[in-house]
Image (cartoon, rainbow, N blue to C red):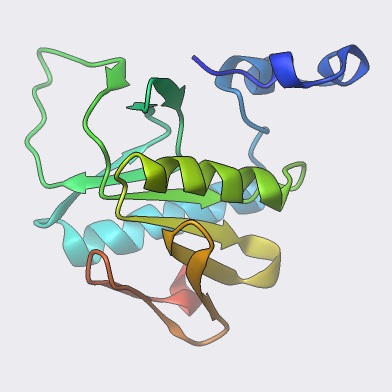
Length: 166
């Protein structure tokens, strides 16, 4: 699994939590968790038959294991008698939520990696701005904010932003 540690100075590594070192990503916050739950709820309510939503799942992307906040996959049945630690199926969409201690550049780089591996769209959610950038290719995105309806052309998903940030 990819970790933050190899890229960071030793003095910064000492300040990271066990969660950050293990998961290779910053620790989520209260707002991060609430927005993530809202997105899963809204997607599940509207698209239950169309998509399987997986939260904090290990996904192998181009030989690396990445952990999107939410992975959106085609609808699939669960086999609860057999589990998978690392999913090798490429998600249709990945959703990343900016954490307070995270750099936006890191999430954009992660979106580029997802897109290069065949993910159709990648959402970068910015709670503090109450906005979402929906990337369809590296450097190509639509930004939704305020009272707008998020429209993901790659999947046809439409969600009112107000419900994601309440």
